[in-house]
Length: 83
Image (cartoon, rainbow, N blue to C red; front, side, top):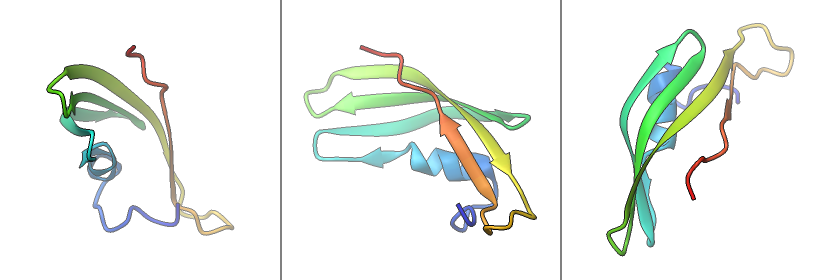
């Protein structure tokens, strides 16, 4: 990505990416932390039926200021571990 979309830190950007509402569910970041360049978050998914799941998200992040293509931030998230 070329920038963090107006967010000051990778953590605030990723908190925003993993907090949203859809017609059938909503996802909320309950707590998050950056340890070095790794983002950790506890997320809560609530289905429209009321079913609740809490799970972890882990993202590896990378920031670069001198990339030739102009991209300054990237992340790779983990696959969901819930069933």
